[in-house]
Length: 126
Image (tube, rainbow, N blue to C red):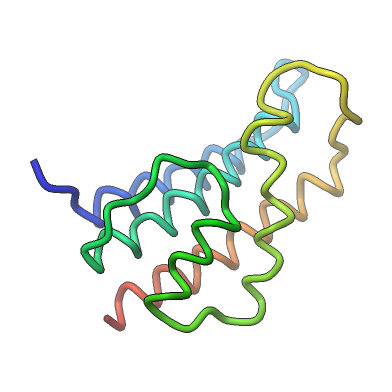
């Protein structure tokens, strides 16, 4: 079955909703930031799919952004996406890293929201 970019963008939006779930004592910011990263990853892959490019099996947002830049212009504000990179693997599991605080979490959600904004806009304009 061929990939449908609409499925990917729906999942990207879903990941953003998960990133914005109200934090309780049983939810850690690291997991919410992971979902923010996933939202952008899936959104970038949606652009690739819409342009008949098989999305690579990677979580590397810098690599994905580079692939998308071969297809279309990337807004300058997209540079902030690199701030989400560490959430794909490093903080996904318990480990030896500095815990994520509320300010960093909020910044990651803002970055994901902005990125999905231009991603959705670019998909609609193609």
